[in-house]
Image (cartoon, rainbow, N blue to C red; front, top):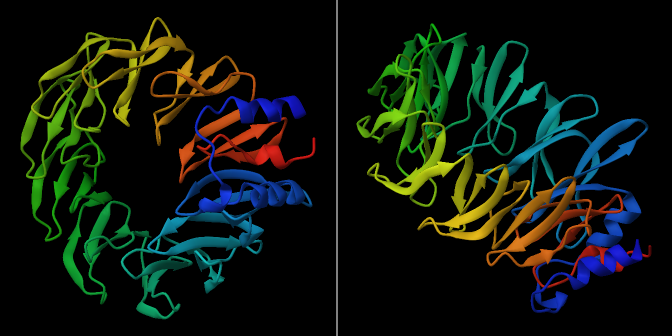
Amino acid sequence: MFIAAMMLMVTCQTIMAQESDSDYSLKGLAKLLVTEKLSAYDFNDGIAKVHKEQDGKILYGLINKQGQFVLPCKYNRIGTLSDGLIAIEDINYKCGYADVRGTVVVPCQYEKVGYYSEGLGRITKGDSCAYINREGEIIIPYFIAYDAESFKNGIAAIEKQKRQTYFIDKQGNVVIPQRDYRCYGCSEGLYIVRSKEGSKYGLMDAKGTMVATMEYYSMEPFSEGLSAVGESQSHKFGFIDTKGSIVVPLQFESVDNFSEGLAAVRKERKWGFINKTGQIVIPYKYERVQKFSDGLAAVCINDKWGFVNMSGELIIPCQYDRCEDFHEGYAVVKNGNQYAMIDKQGQYYIKFGVADYISSFSDGLANAKVKGIDGYVDKNGSSTFKYIRW
């Protein structure tokens, strides 16, 4: 075990830096994780979810990068940070909100809560919903609803009955009357709506005007100004813009969302990449592909994965069983049950056989597991594992 920890340190080939110059404490994280026997997750916005087993139950908490509890491990569930607040559920199955400092700003007293957004959070009691502010004060009184969404662009979708939806403003006034559809989220100021029959999708703006009529059997949230749509009769896919106009004709067997200016598309069972005008930039020759991230995309040939750049040049040979996207300059790769991490030149930052598990970098740290112990790796050639007495 000591050898594994040393390997994790020496296989990180970047320049060493002093921990005192960083916003984290590997020593503090190591002590907390080992002492409390915690399982750790990725950091986002300076905090990470952790859990521990206690009396046969899995209980969740939050930690910061200095190795301190933000929230103790005493919750059944902890959500993701949204508009400065985090949804929490206690062991009595009651829900509330906490902030990033660990203060429970809205006590756990509700059956359910939604994502806090634009200054309001949804609470649920029986078949009724209401909206509260950060202080827990009810701003929009309880009303009967099948479902109620978080606020986006100053309005929220309320599903009175299944697939019968209207929209309210922050004073609770109905601004878009009830219609026979269901709302599937908002992106770039537009709402994806689905017909009552459940077979067709369209686009609606915040005033209730249909930007794209309900004619598509599939529709994805907008990414870089374009939405992937599919047509039922031809089973072909293409892209529309925020005006509802088709900018890339529906001609592909399958598509993925645009990322870094390019989108993966499939023809004759082979994948390539197009730009936003529909021009093929990287030819159809791959069995499978992933989106571009950090300027590189994972591609698969003969069941082996590697990476191409935005010109289609194979930068890292197809030699891995699986690849994750690049994040913060590094990518996790996998052969069999073993994990490794490489840089953009294909050089190993963490070699195979060192860690039981590695996740992508997030917030400057990568979650890893060595000999069953959770910890973190930084980009300066160090990890929490060097502080553990094996």
